[in-house]
Length: 375
Ligand code: HEM
Image 1 (cartoon, rainbow, N blue to C red):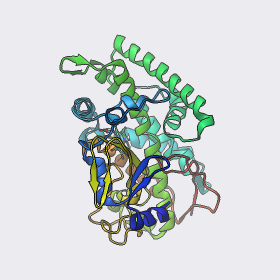
Image 2: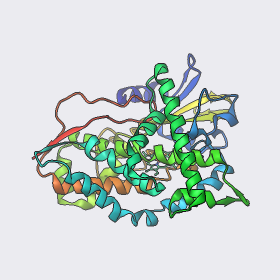
Image 3: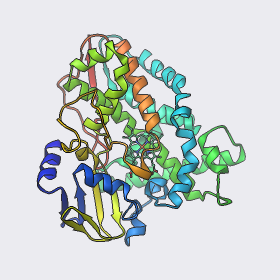
């Protein structure tokens, strides 16, 4: 897709797809504006236009799809749980989970990065944060896949069925926590008050669903996409091994270079003027972060993977009021995972020349399998 992004940035940076009635933004400056100017570019389709979902869409009731003032009120309830300082306290636990996972890999010189580490790590961490038993991991995975996947019309019934079973599960968890509060995020959200009122049941379910999906697939893909970036730039692995202080910069560059979230949607509440284009009100707008992150006007030599790039103001976590709440956690998980891999897997890392299955999705970029060998 990177060739397509480049062509679009150069030829039609604000592109109106008349057939589908959708606008697309490809340049850094326009994507930044679309993501952050919430007065014009709303996150809530229902506030900008006449629109109703075709089926259950839990994320619609979450902060991801809210505008101020409700967005600010609800987001502030969860920020405490995700500050860098609070998240840093999770490091020993994340390291333990990582080591347990890596201990299971036979030292024969190969693993599947997604199956063996990148997938189970974030789902275990988020389950613990929410106070959900780890036996539920397989269900979690199916639910979060269902929420981001785009497998077409025929998969729709299965998708709605998965969402319903997720609702049923979280409804039960909320009921249990109401009776017996625990020390976890769900219990905190249950007792939280905004202007003297508790969150509604739909809002609580939306929050659970958002934390579940936002924290899973994306972090899995960040770890896998980092390995893919290193595979195209093999000298990086040795540099990181010799100087682990470079790891955070390498993660930022992987976020820019192969962004796990390719694009986010916005909905115009008023006319927006971008360069010489006018986008009328009540339009769907797709802001392509993956394209913005390769924009030469922002990143010199944008197609080069440079782990010491400075500055590196990529938009992989969004920008403005919706900036990813889980960014400190995602960064920490990726750092711990890569650090442990660098310690355990010596020599050159190679991704063998086998077909990788891309995840079918308009929103996320990642692969379902990622074999890697070392030594
Ligand atoms: C929002 C990306 C990991 C929780 C966002 C947004 C992006 C993003 C682009 C902004 C969406 C918008 O502007 O409409 C990512 C990436 C991740 C990641 C690339 C991993 C590499 C996580 C994790 C969590 C999380 C681990 C939590 C456990 C959230 C939440 C929001 C959000 C709650 C909504 C914030 C709001 O609307 O105010 N994320 N995310 N994310 N993310 Fe993440």
